Amino acid sequence: MPDLHCLFEYDAWANREVVGHLRQMNAPQRALAIMAHIIGAEWLWLGRIHGEGNPAPVWPDLSLDECETQMKELVPLWQQVLSADEPRRNINYTNSKGERWSSKVDDVLMQVIIHGAYHRGQIATIVRDAGVTPAYTDYSHCIRQGFID
Image 1: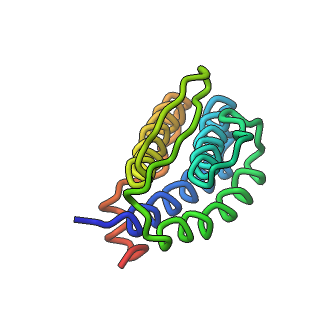
Image 2 (image 1 turned 135 degrees about the vertical axis):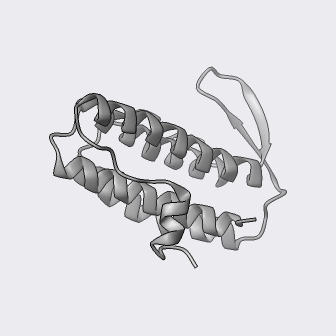
């Protein structure tokens, strides 16, 4: 069973693959908006884990260059969270509807991974609808290519 470190390595790799692929084509605006949303949601959850009261925008307006830069910034920050070894710690936060919630850190980490995969699937559909083969971001492909030990 892959651990969360491995899944976050996969997530970072898959995000890089998608951004690189979008860079090679005339990226549909909706695909770029969804990629920016993946990044915005990661910043939002990271802020919640750290107890920051001012949430990051969940639908930021980012260029491909900004997506790439922010993805690189997120990688070491997630590694710090994973190394803190507080997976069962509860975090309290308010969602975008103003509702108060409490979640365990490891549940939030799994949410980030699943959320990214879900939206990368949407991007793949948009890219395919534009007549282009989407980036190949399957977990098994990442492993076979040697991007994760």
